[in-house]
Amino acid sequence: MKFFVDTAEIDAIAELNDLGMVDGVTTNPSLIKKSGRDILEVTKEICDLVEGPVSAEVIATQADDMIAEGRKLAEIAENIAVKLPLTWDGLKACKVLSGEGKMVNVTLCFSANQALIAAKAGATFISPFIGRLDDINLDGMDLIEDIRTIYDNYGFDTQILAASIRSVNHVLESARIGADVMTAPPEVIKKLATHPLTDKGLETFLKDAEAAGIKIV
Image (cartoon, rainbow, N blue to C red; front, side, top):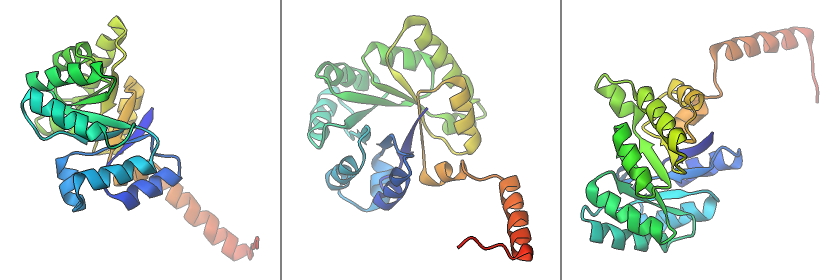
């Protein structure tokens, strides 16, 4: 499974990238706002930092305007994935931009039918939102599983990018089902390394090492 980090904070991306934990980055207008940076400036800096796809989202709602914005964003770097909403106009823009050879991430997916039609429109990535489905008492993992089945049935190349991930269990279940990519905030990715028994075991080892006077250097 590929790991994308869902943030526009350069320091957080750099730390994970140095550990080989970043296969790409996803951003959105809310994350750009949080960073306090100009969208073109910070997106260029992220693209220079990581080799994988960097999703940059349009803010237009009409297809022609989305296409224009998508082309502008794609000029930032070769690894830009233009992020489009899963609306009819978004699908029109997806068809045009993917036809021009640009990577396209179709976002805000909440049904398998939406994922199917996005694949037909040529999406590079489809971003089903797990956490937001959980918020309304639906199981986001059911959606990931349905999309995986449909894409495998027909050999679609569109990659499933599990999004709105809020817990390590979301990561585990996405990997178990077979999502191609997951995107999560830096703090969730870091939590993948933690376990209470690891902490307990380390505490015991350190106490025994101190009691035995063990020194290595």
